[in-house]
Length: 212
Image (cartoon, rainbow, N blue to C red; front, side):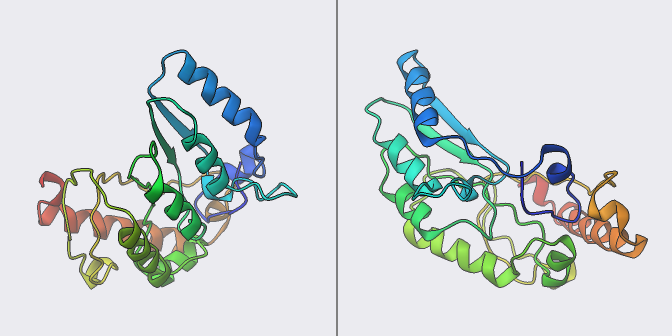
């Protein structure tokens, strides 16, 4: 589930609130998979960084990652998805010192415009996102080959000099989801979100960024 209620998202309405699995149960399942020869484990959640928030103890996503990294097997560990408002420095520190966790972070941009982010109810700003990326890059040495680097997203597409290296570039349009906040809000908001998306895609096509 999810507790964030982004304007365009139906997940909280169809999956309910976030529920964390017990840490011991996750570790036991991962251990069993590794004993059976699995070489890569992916931790999957709508917002993995809020793992453990519904517990009354010290359980956290950082603790889960650290515990799994201590398993004495030869394997790779990755996770998705991270919400920019919740990715903590503690999690990044665990990744930087780990033996098994891949140096790759799935961190959705959504928009470089604070106005659009607010319309989306994303609960972070462009400045918060950029500071998070700066913190990550200061702590983790990325060994992945990026598909394109240091693209100067112009102000016209609402990213205003956002220079970040991306490994992947998935883009999706915003669809009206019955029951979501976006579906119940006014047409102007729906159009603003989709026009911002279309403007970004047109910029990428014009500058052949998809081919780089």
